[in-house]
Length: 379
Image: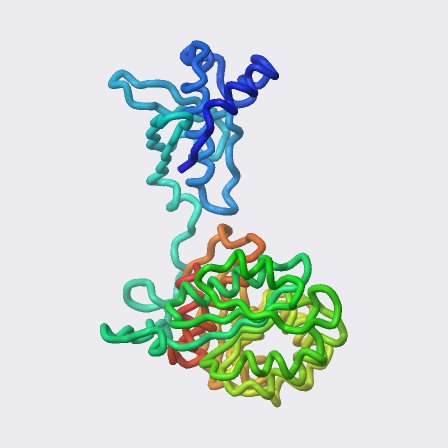
């Protein structure tokens, strides 16, 4: 859906003339609109809505390559230029006007099958669900305390989005309470951004950076946690590394370690096997390479075998992200997520996954089942 302000479109045409109209309208559309700002704005909104209806990672056509004209029965008919993503696809559009606004809704019913590959052969079980997939119990008389408290430590200056996305991943998992711990100077940003998450400020060692001096405050923030996620957008300051090394062993709750937590621990790899087996590691291939000391190409050549090997070495559940995400447990269980999609090839999706897995662990799913379920729901 998109909304366009009719006066703004009219003002732009008045200022720039037909040059502005030709940026988003075909010649036939310009003729049909006949100088009507309402019709101009309606098509602007409709083309924006079509773009929004497309999955992340799928290239969008230019506005001028999409033509919207009335069909014989009066309904909007969408025609897309050849050699564009949407050529030949059915697109349903509705355009309405309310006061000074044009409102449009677009639906592309048959887009998903072309861009989302079928499940990978040889994996999964009945209904396409991977081995280990399990939704947490949701009793009808439950309350927020029933479904766990999840604490997320994330974010730094310039990376507030990572903190927001990780905490919202936890919230969307169904967790009862989600607390987000962030450096003092970025607290106002997250406090305003987050409406479903409790945001707490942590003393910082420099603007937007938490370090070893923040340890006691962070430990207080983790008090009472049923699960946690540490790392998205946290930064790589040397003091932050010392913080992670001392913090993780002192948190009793199951944890997801992601992003910068993994990057920082890769500088002290020998610590990994000594950490709790209730920890889930969620590296992408480059992060896995840093943690393991291997080359990224070697990791990618045998994703399943290497993930399984290091899950045993580290005594941790490992989620090796990428097309056909591998979830490996120390006891030898290995699951390959049956969905692989380029729609997830976008910054921030890994932060959401970290929070989602933590949220499922907060609802009492064991680490392996939480990882399998989180990965599959995320895909």
